[in-house]
Length: 481
Ligand code: PLP
View 1 (cartoon, rainbow, N blue to C red):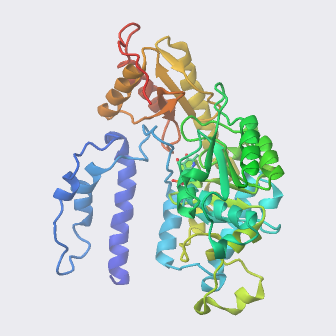
View 2: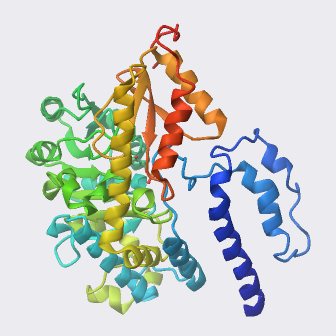
């Protein structure tokens, strides 16, 4: 594709995306295709000869679009949001256009230096501890996902707990232990599997039934028992905004215990952490100054396209010690000078995209004011939604909801709640997902789509209330899980 063809098709693509956003609201949120339907609409064999670009957008409309759940739809209230915005799309497009690979500082100095600066900017915007900034012993890096952040935090923790022995000797069965709440995202369990310590190393902490926060007293008990049994506590993961209900763990208390036993404290604030752009929500950072590592995802709630997980460590030497390998072909003078960051040593893969560009375009476009307005708007909508739930005697709020996630259930029992969720999602009017709270089936209303306005939240509430069981109609109150 030569420059002129690229220009022509590029304009068509940008127009297509702009039109998509303009008509998004008229599309059903949740895809309705049956398994295999998308594939059946496409040729089974790859083209023998090049087909050019003409026809791609038509196929996108006719075959691909019906097979999509529209994550940017204003009535998408499922999971947590995955932001996409104009400045971010354009930043990502520039990164694609440049096509650089910033595995080493030397392979594109600007890619590394912009990333380091963006993570420093973001740490300032979120008022994170000075120890996470690049001018300290710590620093920040963009990871693909919060799951990668948990994994690299674990290998850094194992490196530190073993004084560097895990890199050569491996981890051995039963030597190390990891602790996290039953509410924490499954990525921590996956990290244990990938790192080779296995899920047997993972201890799940009890939670307070009212706040769903991890109980430090239980952590203290588990740590003491593991040490008595000859195991080394390596990592404690605290959640700030856990996936199911948004639960917030007492970070300072968990950190105090972790450090007493020489363990690493990682904070997973994948969804909620970015709320700290607002001064009045900075209470979510309580205790973070004691964390060894911290992650939050601008790609969830901060207007930045997937993938962009911001991950900071207070001691970058532990992370680099765990992950650095320098084969001959990567040796270069800048690395050997010790004056530069080589981000390949901060992550699992070697290669890396220029993701800092989209963070740069987002932070420049919105500024602190725009980011705050975005978060505040969603928090206000969620509080209003929760007040409607609380005032309706058919429903019950099941968890605290200080941010933009509201978890609730029908008073008629699990079956009624499940049927209600299915009916709302089948309508195409809104998309919500579920969780279990103390064994009860609960609906999660996660407000975070960039395009969501009050009228969309009102419409979702109407979609819910018009299908809700009336008192005494639920019938089946059997608990699931
Ligand atoms: N941690 C939390 C609290 C999450 O909510 C999620 C996903 O929703 C994850 C981790 C995993 O996120 P990622 O897709 O970035 O790995």
